[in-house]
Image 1 (tube, rainbow, N blue to C red):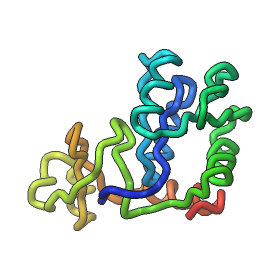
Image 2: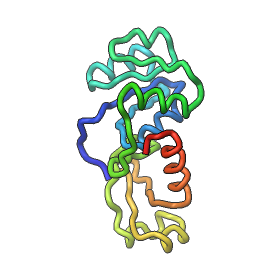
Image 3: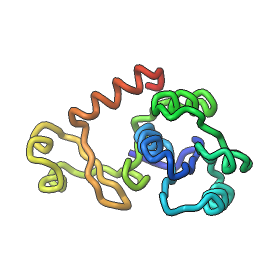
Image 4: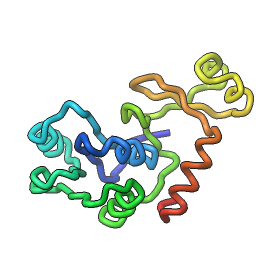
Length: 154
């Protein structure tokens, strides 16, 4: 599903785990590591040309950082979408767990890696190139799309 892209890349602080998952589902390369201190986040941002997304006023002073004042996830997504011009890129979805790129998983190889009902109901599957997690367009897919459409991001 994913390939190299000129889209913005992000690193988020440890207060923004849900936001990181949603940015990944939208197709944006987003680093989230709860163990990173502010100095480490800034270092990674500089070395990998990532924008910092944070709720921490001190960290927001770093070059390229964006302070999110709202705690509401939808408001955060809207603020970032406005600031960076983000939209949903279905073909670039990343692993919501580890940020790995998704690659095609043939249906026959998905058997046993996904619930039987999902295997029967779907023809297309993906797996994370890093953590091997399997993905498919299940009922949750509709909810993701609805939320992104409601926010004007899809």
